Image (cartoon, rainbow over all chains, first blue to last red; front, side, top):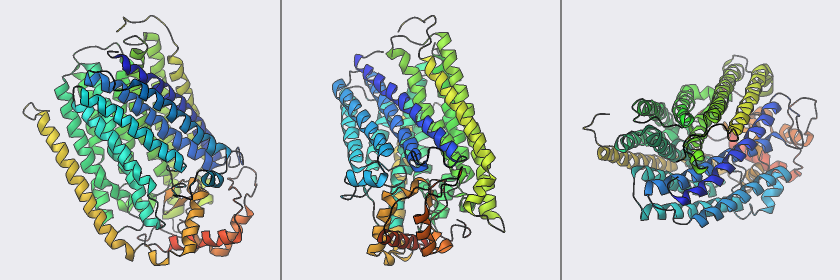
Amino acid sequence: MQYKSQAVAKPYFVAAIGLFVGQILFGLIMGLQYVVGDFLFPAIPFNVARMVHTNLLIVWLLFGFMGAAYYMVPEESETELYSPKLALILFWVFLVAGALTVLGYLMVPYAKLAEMTGNDLLPTMGREFLEQPLITKVGIVVVALAFLFNISMTVLKGRKTSITMVLLLGLWGLAVFFLFSFYNPSNLVLDKFYWWWVVHLWVEGVWELILGALLAFVLIKVTGVDREVIEKWLYVIIAMTLITGVIGTGHHYFWIGAPAYWQWWGSIFSALEPIPFFMMTVFAFNMVNRRRRDHPNKVATLWALGTGVMAFLGAGVWGFLHTLAPINYYTHGSQITAAHGHMAFYGAYVMVVLTIISYAMPLLRGRQANSNKSQVTEMWGFWLMTVSMVFITLFLTAAGILQVWLQRVSATPMPFMQAQDQVAIFYWARELSGVIFLIGLVIYLVSFFVKGEEKATA
Amino acid sequence: MSESFTKSMARNIFWGAAVFSFLLFLALTFDTTAALPKRDNRQNLTPEVVRGKHIWETNNCIGCHTLLGEGAYFAPELGNVYKRRGPDFIKGWMKAMPTGAPGRRQMPQFNLNEQQLTDLVAFLKYASEINTENWPPNIEG
């Protein structure tokens, strides 16, 4: 650790991992409810578990992004953070607000929660991923702006690198596009159209800039490859991201009431979306092959390479699988979508946050890398989580193909629940894979406490 | 990448790409906005429908169901449920929940009154009349 103020990243990373555990536990509850329908009903109905599962994911990734920014920006800017104190205050505000929101989901009926939190003043709740009460949404904006102020001031007073530029652009974009979550017209088509300006322009737009910046930073550190080369790659990758991803939003506009021409725009541009992800994979492997040093933190390098591969498979390949309009006509809103969602989020965003944590955490704890024993344990976590996520995706894909066939393609279409019963075996297999994912996560957690002989301190 | 291709060239390509993409996206959005009145069934946005959408949202229906294919995949598509089941069935169904059938997926009881059920049905009827380019492929959603 080169700057004292980088230490504020640590609580952010710890909170991120803690919430990650919560996310997985609720995922397992939902997975079981798919086959044992009345499991935990009425204490935790499926919709509540799902809200907790997806909202925890978003919040812990945001913790990860913020922690990453607090770690990276002082080092890149070669100056202390503008205000470490503000960063710590924001940490507690965000954590408490997040915890209260999740408790609200779990303890109060959703309609009651909406009433209590002023949803009637400005209705924004009850839309997928944007279920947060109005006060939470306002809180997110306040925390995001204060965070951006802190980071931007740090960049302004220090060295400006391409990596911090791209990171800042991504983070500002994240905050700006979130503002569309406050726009909820009664016209369902307009509602849906602009809802995607948050959801799609986040995950297939500005978040990818953040992803690129994090990956580039870690690759510079672990490979020692010239910054000029890495930043050149970064720019080309994110250029391709925006060229394909922005108009690629159109793949969500096929069947929600928008004009039919989106079927062309959306299909063509989003069919190109795998390209930036493929470049990211080539980039990661290329840089590691051309490395000028052998960094003792092997497992961080593994996470970086894994991010490239899994983001390409999950976001790129599984996205392409159902993005062309004639195919999407049948697969839209089926388990195929769920399969893609799982591997894309894991491969791109979960893995990149775990990459930066894997790289930075040992340094934050006063050593360049963890002991060999600890790293091997973390690698077990990596492989168990990654392989089980591949299986979750494969089983959901199988369930999805069958579902689509029985319910939509067949000459005698089956009702929804009847089709669900037919594919139950794949839901059981998915749940089993989920249990293995949890085991991988536990082993990952254990790796933080494995001692063994330490390498030289930084 | 080749040495003659410099970082500043890459940066210029990025900025060009970003600006071009967003401008094109805004232009398409502008055109879509002009085309929507003929497609989005806005003439039927009655006070009932508006209230119905609010009920849809504040009971987190999207947490289990899809609406025009978006939402959760745990329970049936409801964009066309008005056409599939009709108003009386929907009301009766909501009142009868949860079934309590052992091992089956359960839908909570939302305790909506008659007016709220009528509003919700009005919203689902309005949703079913949006021009979705003939999606879903059949009545089962």
